Length: 249
Image 1: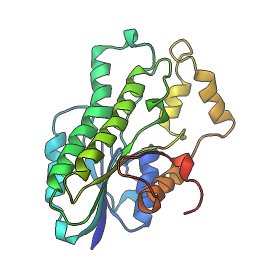
Image 2: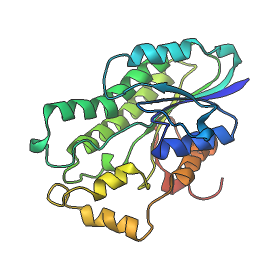
Image 3: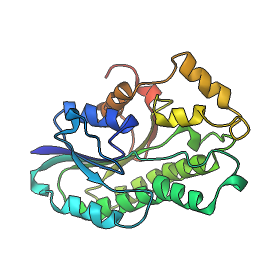
Image 4: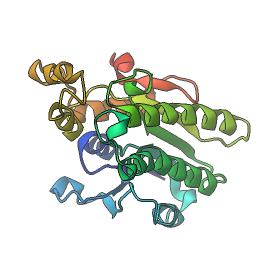
């Protein structure tokens, strides 16, 4: 029997930390991302190159991945919707239509599509099935200049709650949770620190996170997400923060 992880954006940032944690625990891993990680540590990761900020091909590619998996051989399968973007930092009136569309596609539409396919394709699978949506504290706190990011993450949280309610009514359900990873040292943080204070009035606070070593590292956060998944105690549909689970399990 095998354990499987399918993750979006698993080639870098928090995704790479998640991949490392699950791989260390014997999972077979599929990573769907725009680019490929060529490091030796990814030699046994099945990498599917796909731009998730564009609608074309997402449903068919993900369906093909699930179709080649023998459900009888699966003990546990986890889908982690990790890929995301801040979009254009700045007030909404400065955002081009194309940027609005691509941000909503990557942060929201793509997870909706992948979750839909996953739920449909694994409905009859008699194994442990789980979806983890990587969200953000920005889902519940309004940040100047982050309208697209805050709004899409808030929608991710509500999708998580609704899908859990739906699943609990049908039997052989998929467990679905959302996780806030906290402020982590990734390229997204580089992007924030390189923004203009006119577009993002909280800039100094995020610069200070870096200067005071207050940022989490991707390996630690990846392991924390793995531990929450495997050992955490929570209700289906929960929205969790890694900072609440930092005591040893």
